[in-house]
Image (tube, rainbow, N blue to C red):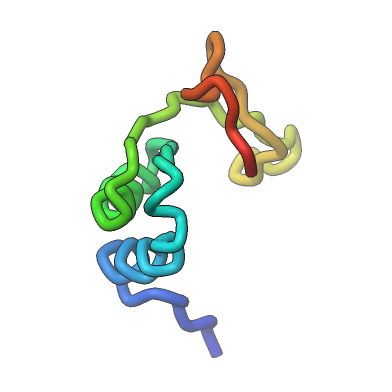
Length: 87
């Protein structure tokens, strides 16, 4: 039996994530998305809590024996987007 997806589509994922992030609305949130699937959902999420939205261009660092899997990413310059980010 195949695993069922958690979300029906990107629209549902963005809607549910934006609701979960609603509590951060007053903290001037910054949402950073990574292209390759994250920008469409990120744009939807950023609209609900009225967050600033940015895109981070990064390259995946793949495992040599499994190029589909990644162990990190690399980007040029200061790609944090703000002076201080708290995760």
